[in-house]
Amino acid sequence: MRRRQRNPSPLQRLVLFSIAIIALVGGYYWGNLHAPKNIGMLAAGLLEDPVTLRPIALRDQFNEPFDNQRLTEYWNLVMFGYTRSRNDSPVMLTLSTQILNRMADRPELQKHIRVLFVTVDPEHDTPEVLGAFLKFYREGFLGLTGTISAIRAFAGQLGVRFQRQPANTEGDYRIDHSTSMALVDPHGRLFGLFTGRVDAASIAHDLKLIMNKYD
Image (cartoon, rainbow, N blue to C red):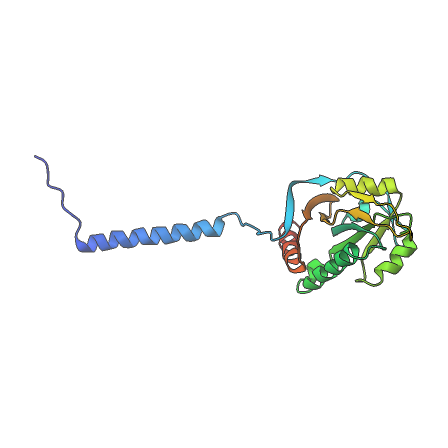
C-alpha cells in the first residue's frame, strides 16, 4: 500500500524558505568576495602582453646616454614633440604636470612615475635646448634627443609617427606627430597607451590602479 505523502507544515515551509534565503545571500557574498577584480580603466589601453623594447640609444638634457637600462625602476610616461611646437608639446607637458599633481595623495606611487619628452626635431633640440625648455615645467622631466634614425626607431616601437613639413618663406616649419602617451613599465616594456581625448584625472586614476596591481 502506498503511503500518503504529507505536505510540509507552515513552520517547515518557513524554515526551508529561511535556509534558501541564507544560502542565496551567502553565495552572493562569497562570490563577490572571491571574484576577480576588474581594475576599471578610464583612459588607458593596456596591452594583453607587454612588449619588451628593442635597444634605445638616445641622450638626455644633461647629455648623458639614455638606454633601456634607464627605463627600469620607473613607470615611464613617454611622449613625443619638439620645443618649437606652439600647441601640442606645451599641452602634453602641462597635462603631464597635472597628472603628477593628482598623484600627490599617493606619494609612494608618485615618486616612481617619470615623464620622458622625446624630441622629433633633433637638429634644433640639442640637450642644452631641451634643458632650457623643460625648466618651465615640473622638475624631474627628462628630455631625450639623438640621431633622427635612433628617434624614429624608438618612436616606431611605441606606434608613433612623425613627419616634418616644408618651411614657409619665413623659415617656420611644423612637424606633424602622434600625440599619444605611451606607458613603459619598470621592466622596459611597452605596457599600454593613452590616446585620444584624455584628461589628468582619468590618467592619474588609471596609474594608481595599474601600479597597485602590477608593482
